Amino acid sequence: MTSPVLTAIYQRRSIREFTDEEVSPELLREMIRAGSWAPSGLNNQPWRFVIVRTEAIREQLAEQTHYGHIVRAARALIAVYLDTTAMYDSLKDHQAAGACIQNMLLAAEALGLGAVWLGQILKNKKEVNRILMLEDHFDLMAVLAIGHPQHRNQQSKRRDLPELLLKEL
Ligand SMILES: Cc1cc2nc3c(=O)[nH]c(=O)nc-3n(C[C@H](O)[C@H](O)[C@H](O)COP(=O)(O)O)c2cc1C
Image (cartoon, rainbow, N blue to C red; front, side, top):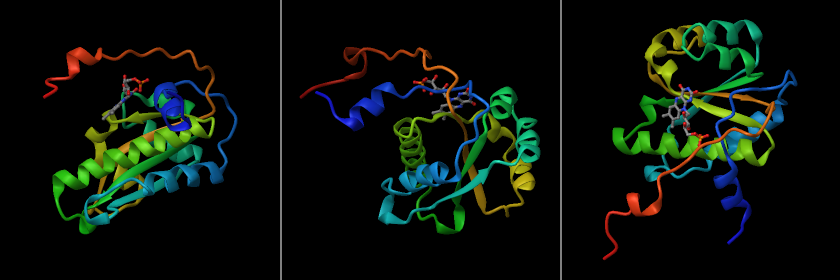
């Protein structure tokens, strides 16, 4: 079976090496638009976003994670937040954030960009809020490092279905 959606799902890989080419603001907004069309409980849309293209701010963020080399290589970042004042159910709102982020990664794939979901930086989420000048009620979910891929030969693998499928009743 082929469809553009399935192709994007299967072809998407975490991209961690980028060219120096800038990422256009329109493409970043398209990624955010795709994220915003994720499902959310009660359609409460608790996600919020910060686009970072400025090199000096990227450098400050790079210092907050073990994966600083990826942050430095990426020409753009999108920090994905939950606005805790817009939340109604912690588990469901976090699930919605995950759906939003995956939509964004698939959009990056569809737009010919490369991206990787950075979670390790969450250990310094307070410092990230300070750098981005955000109030405490914004809770960092992920930073997406985005750029034009240097190559697309990133390999990944998945467990086979029989290992995952517990039962078929
Ligand atoms: C919650 C979460 C956190 C992640 N954090 C990082 C990270 O901090 N650094 C990184 O290089 N990749 C990170 N990744 C990317 C995973 O390593 C990657 O998705 C996984 O190895 C599968 O590879 P693939 O995305 O190419 O299929 C994260 C992914 C998720 C879902």
